[in-house]
Length: 443
Image (cartoon, rainbow, N blue to C red; front, side):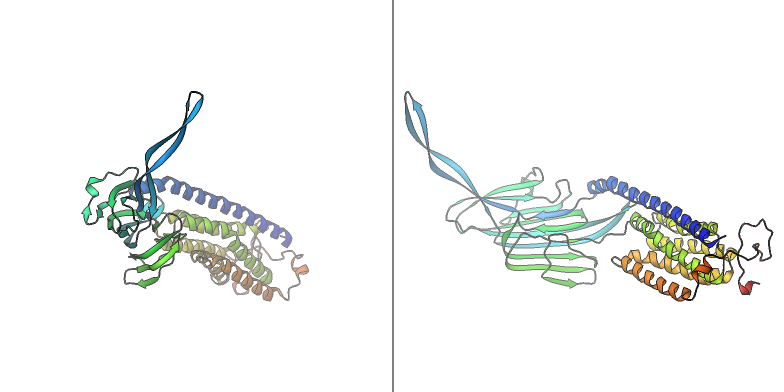
């Protein structure tokens, strides 16, 4: 076969396998998306949603009297009417101090094909309020649960040492109580519960930007891999323990609109690496085909495009097996199994097509680098692009060194002159489809 024709055939094989990978990657993305959309709401109903616990809203309310002036028509003239009316005035207030603790225990669970980062949380908060106004009135304390449909065990709502949880009824996920206050009064509000949530836990000290005085928040975890959600303040101190972390936020006075909290670690979803590997697989196959073609040109080994088709199918088998085995196995065993199966397919096939030495040394090493090594880079965030760059430069260097003395005009114009070989190594008949030059040590 003329080298140009063989190149076109290899390009056609590469295009076919690339299309197959793109289709398979799209299937993986669609399957993962459908699973996520269907199961996320179910898990939230069964366990709980993301928690963003707001601080109790404090509102000072008092009744004032004022004169209301109006006019009324009396015959042909207007008369001014004055009357005394009562009006309820409300003014938002901030706590004088805040002491909040939360203990988050991770409980990752698998539902369907998706992993969910669930947690149990024990929350306790204590807030004080000092009434500095000269007027007496009432302080409305409104507490909103982070999840109106959530579960709250051992709930406590204590105001000035008096437990009020049993006497209050939630309305739309909120509890409210009115406490009379006199100038100089100091109130203490204590709230606590045990609940369950998903993905993130946060404490929101105020609605919008506010002045926080004597603010202290402490959060403990039983896991080490932590992150912080968007619009969250970094902790003042961070101490690593045997089980996890102890995070503290301590401010004498701070003006902020941010919250405090953490994001729990996420398990790698089975469909995500499968689709990512599929979409980038043509890059690794291109490098592998390039190395095989250059080695074949250097050593005058004629590998037919049909052979390349089977090699591409062996590469595709890696992603196909990984995509469906990772649903039932952990990522590492699924990856190892897929790698072994694909390499066995390639090596045993090239052992028959070319020679045992070529299959077990050159081809196996190339597949180990361009398939297994390249795929492994996807499991380290931020290193995939760097891996592609390094492999590209490394391959370019090898190819340039190997082919520096080749006369490409002659190499791409010559036709195969080798006698056809049968799989046993003996000369075949003219009807044999594949002809290739034998390795010197095979003769």
